[in-house]
View (cartoon, rainbow, N blue to C red):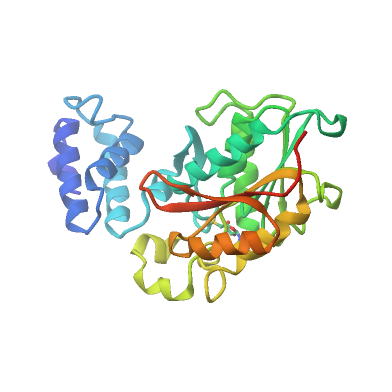
Length: 310
Ligand SMILES: C[S@@+](CC[C@H](N)C(=O)[O-])C[C@H]1O[C@@H](n2cnc3c(N)ncnc32)[C@H](O)[C@@H]1O
């Protein structure tokens, strides 16, 4: 971006020039990316204030942000945040950036949690676990949308655990564009493989187990856009050499960690939906269904432990 050329120009005109530069770099959503870079770096949203002049002293910083995006750094890492079910989540290098399709997966977990009666063994609470929490996206959505819940978010990666703790604290403090979390809701972020760090006393008592685990095969690496290849941690994406190991491990763990009638929701590779359904049946789960995302792709397998919730 040419800082001098942008001086004294209305926001809309600068946005068009930036979008042209981003499109030339091969960026698919150049116009919205230009909008959000300008809004984040100058405080002026060119859609809302098209004729406003951008503050001159902010232009060098904007030019630096545009150069990073031209080099195919993800928008969310440049801006530092993303939106997930209306929650503003902090994003950092080294931690997987939440994707919009996972909002649908979180929604299924939220619906299953809300359907679980509160009176289980006199607890009056719901026990929910998010495995492979990353930024804490799904756990934060559960915390905001499900009352009377004790939530555990687990991740094997220390950087993810640290960021998830930050995001849970921001959400609880009301600093994440949502009203906050009910005082009665607890959220613990733990580090460990799958459910290894979850209190063993919870085994057999979960209302909902949800995960967006790594589920892509190793061969997919060659097809990734630079944003994914160079910026998402590969351990967050690759689920073993055939891609399905973590999904299958989670479905097998679900049968012993869920309470009778409890639900498991696991995001999957749409190309492996038949295998995921088969793995759920093999694990002894029932009412196995596939959940479609907004593009119509099978995005999650949903199932229950046999038995009644009541
Ligand atoms: C695809 S990312 C999903 C992150 C987040 N749930 C979301 O939807 O944005 C997968 C996450 O699982 C974590 N992970 C990978 N293998 C794991 C394992 N064996 N146990 C726990 N977490 C794991 C990664 O560190 C990463 O944060």
